[in-house]
Image (cartoon, rainbow over all chains, first blue to last red; front, side, top):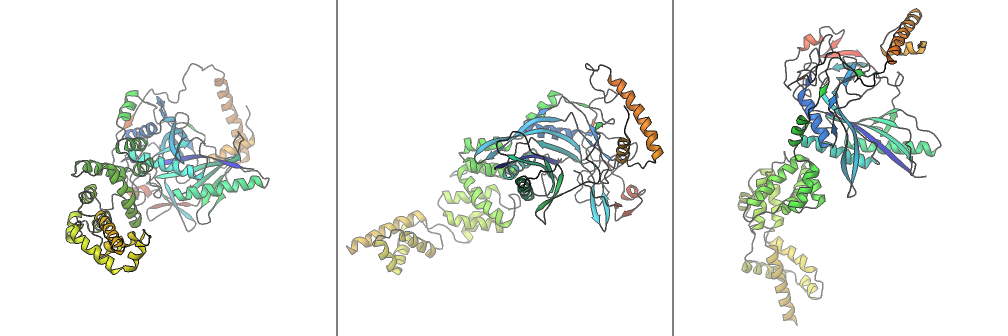
Length: 487
Length: 98
């Protein structure tokens, strides 16, 4: 029997506000000494009262709008009660029945086809503190307690670990475009839980759902989902039943393990938060936020195809990272002003080809690469006006990144100007042909691909500086001349 | 509506309360009486009345996103039964939450 996987994702995203959700403590806790960004509110001391951070609400609405959600007219907070040392109040302020935004979708590209993944809700809550287990004891740091957190719950529309990866990547791209979160999974700013079930293909009802936790990177999400899907299919094929439970991904062992709790099924006893008045969201507020949204990756990709003539593939590669897209757009603007102009398509080819390769090689992003859009435009201007050829440009690019020296200066200092002078090149071509009589003979006997090899020899003789077009026409001329002299 | 002993034990467990057998019986009676009272309120037709979570009719109370001073670490840990290197120290708990 064939089985299919049904996956829904719950993604927690920390918001990049300055202060915490319900108090004025600094929300940037990553490098702070423990328990230094805390106050009576985020420590849950008796009598302390929370006050809503306006920017956190705005960031949530912006996220909801970017995910095509409806924004609630009235929203409120609820207490989610559970006992755990990372939760100083013994309850988390969250949203239960009236989330800030709901009923949206996000579009992913599956094998070249758009697929909508439903977004059930995006609600706003507060983060918990952090526990470190040392020598059988737990150390607690409440600096993270109260940092604004949104929970983005998808519909069970995801059908494979690959679709889950695409969804998460898109989600991260969107929150980064909006500037509402760093989306940094390793730093815990984006955290993923998955609900996974399997069912025979063709069956309408869902199988028993298992919640998978502890996935700390995109890669571990993929591996954990692959493992869990296979595990459930294995259980069913062996005639067993899947147990409804929570399982943790153990990266070092490459498997999920049951996390049975001592306590019975979670009983959160949600009830309305009496300390926080509800919010009435004015339509004018939502509209103002909608107008202020930046151009989002999907819109950008459409525009790149339409205005710049890029392929969907290249457009997708560039818009996947907001900083890359901004870099590219600066280059396009400069390229249009340059004489001769450097077209957007050429810039895109260099960006997604050589520059992405160098970024990957050096494990750097576009910001740390030390290459300005102006430098690339200058470099490609030198190609366009015939000063250097493409291959030399690649070598100069590397040099620009390593030394920070402008391209034109590198070309001068290293004497890389392209040799286009026909007389000079004709002399070199003749010399190369004289040095390789066997290859010349092979060419004349009909092995025309040898011309490419001879071309390589000429490029070598000129240290790569020869104008390839001129060399090719000279080579053909001189080889044909030798043919006629043989006949 | 009479609560079972198991209900009382469950609620006590959630509240981290240790109850004697006599207390369990006592609270079973008292909690049942409270639920009976709530059940009477449930009989009212509230179809046209929006749920009331709060009696103060405040709306949209928000603050600007500004950082204000936090407490000093010594103050934060002043009442902690145990602390180490700036952390609260508590017994290990195995259960994990989101």
